[in-house]
Amino acid sequence: MMLNNILKEAATVAIAGHIRPDGDCVGSCMGLYQYLTENEPDRQVDVYLGEIPDAYRYLLPEGVIRHQVLADTKYDLFICLDCADKERLGFAGTVFDQAKRTWCIDHHISNRKFADENLVKPDASSTSELVYRILDRKKVSKRTAELLYLGIVHDTGVFQYSCAGPATFRAAAELLEKGIDAPSIIQNTYYEKTYAQNQIMGRALLESIVFMDGACIAAYVTKKIMDFYGVSPKDLDGIVSQLRVTKDVEVAVFMYETEASVYKVSLRSKEKIDVSRIAAYFGGGGHVRAAGFTLAGTPHDVLNNLSKQIEHQMKGDQENPTGDNT
Ligand code: 5GP
Ligand code: MN
Image 1 (cartoon, protein in one colour):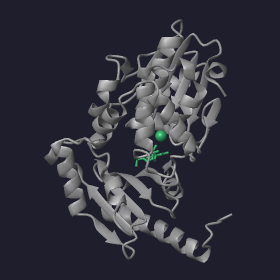
Image 2: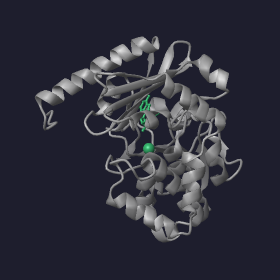
Image 3: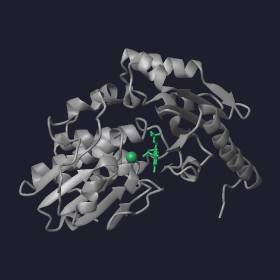
Image 4: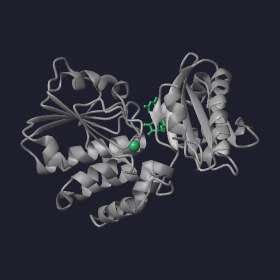
């Protein structure tokens, strides 16, 4: 599949990603936007995304991203990136509904294939890597390369996760050849934290609990604590990865309160547990090693429900050590 087969005659194109956009969502949407504005100037291209983390902003053109939908926005083509189901499109869902044709380009194993046509490749480390595969590589500029690199860096945890395969490194190498400042992208968007972000991470780690003989670790922050440190959900990136690196832990759980007694839950695993299956059980989704969902209840209710599912899978794996569950 190449981009031209997706674009066809579309004169107007909308691009959107999932709610609370992360590095891969922003990188893939804005990388594709940048490529199209440079190489397909006759087409009108608009991007719809939620609030962008401050740290990514220096890589983005100003005033381009639309944060709300005007009435009657009917596009020839809607391209949905890094988004596994219709609900995750959030406010851009109405643009999707009105579009003449819809395409979904994604790497989530849990993708529901909700568009007219769907390019879903769970073998891709990131949607940004997948977008790179369908572009004409010669026409990828330094600006586009920076954005796709941002996405790959974030979804691979700076190339550390198992999703980063040979194809990922080859794509990254080709993006480096475009002259991008890779160390700055990694430092500025991935590792750098504000003082408040570090403080709330410290607090979450300090109050974390381990259970199942140390195989699981969990931490949560309430809305009240977030207000105390003056942080919002987009400032909480990285906490679950820090929990995950704890020695002997297989599953890390991080939760934050989105509204009174409703928690957004992030799951990460190291090598055995398929957290996408657990997230799907609770109505969410994601990848084998990184997934999420939203659940109502106290943090203890959420953890109780969750630990049953984790235990269930751990037991299943013990009875069936090859991991072949078919
Ligand atoms: P995170 O924990 O960083 O929010 O998300 C980890 C992965 O799971 C991401 O790929 C994200 O898209 C996916 N994910 C997180 N929450 C949800 C959810 O509520 N529904 C679905 N379908 N996927 C989710
Ligand atoms: Mn992604």
